[in-house]
Length: 491
Image (tube, rainbow, N blue to C red; front, side, top):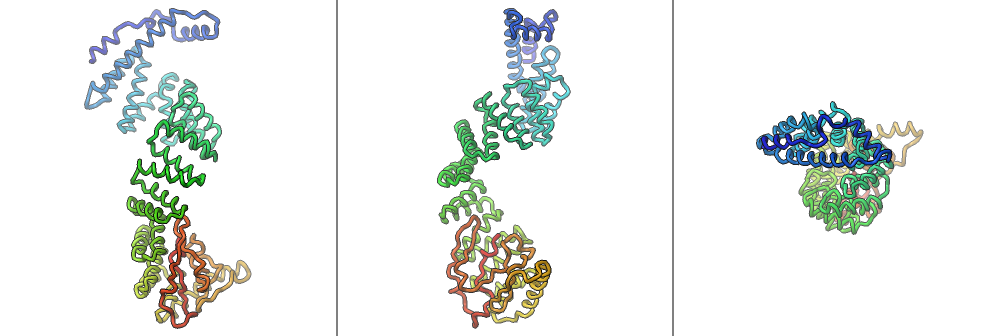
């Protein structure tokens, strides 16, 4: 093969001898012919045609034999042919170097590919332009956006009809926040190459950023006709339907997507949320459970399932999910409080008391735990004075700064069965971000039916008449525990 390729190169190519005109003179003559200053030279046109034909034969032969010259190391074959071509066919050698870089990328040998492409930086502008598109892409991935834009400019200036170069330029503008200009470059790339999937996809993304959801939807629908099985395209179509509150079509497209990626936990959880919005709790539960099966560490899914089991009064299963959440976030006390609340609702007050005492030992300043301890000790008829004193002291300590700032008491103090709760106090550090923690949550019995336990994405939660199941305390107004449920602890 090497001898055959050498014979191919030995064939003389018309118009490439020493006696032929210089490239600059040829370019000047072509420019003069293009603007009508001189008549077109038929001989020059014929010579150019023969040169293009010969170059095509050479590069095709090179691409055929390089992978098999050394089957164990294809790079060695490329390097041999490049060395042979460089003396007389430098342009073809540069083109083959780009092929070698692309081959490295296909084999996931990224460092070698980058090294080959960056070697073009030392060449003249014409040869840099040959690799500019790929260099721009490499620098973009390396987050060197200034260099990426520099080579994108070089690439599309050298060839205005290079769709990939236009896409690279649009990507750089998109990162700079110039959405309108980026959109124009993507549209121009589509005008040059109607089926340029990168340009169409990025056009859809920039339309989403601009809030033009209808135009984004049209872009992704068009792309779906070109690549009908691409999961990213199907996802964006489904997501756009959901953003437009067309939940029926959103479910349809997410179902199509789930056939392409059946084990994606994010898609399954998203479908569960949509069914939740549709008030189809059975399907919402099914998809959340499937999501948990494939990815059992998502706190959103775990908390949703835990609350679903609570409102279904399946407390043993709810405990399993809240314990899993506490394993994932061992320093977050709310999950342990949820577990303990489930034991209380199962009337396993002894176990609940043990867990509350453990939580208090580890988090002595947690107001939630202290309130529960006071309440459950009263229910069980055990001494609670020590806990009551700590609770009062913490409440007073939190109340003082607020009174100093406002010049008066912050919010009304509500007494329910002897427990004082400051409605305006700040939540404890462990409970920030949960709508005020447990403060202000202890309410009169006649207000309890009005409250709803909230699962993620606004899942309705009936209280299930738990108040009728509880063993009543000897004196109703001494029941400090009330009917607080785990829904109150949800973020």
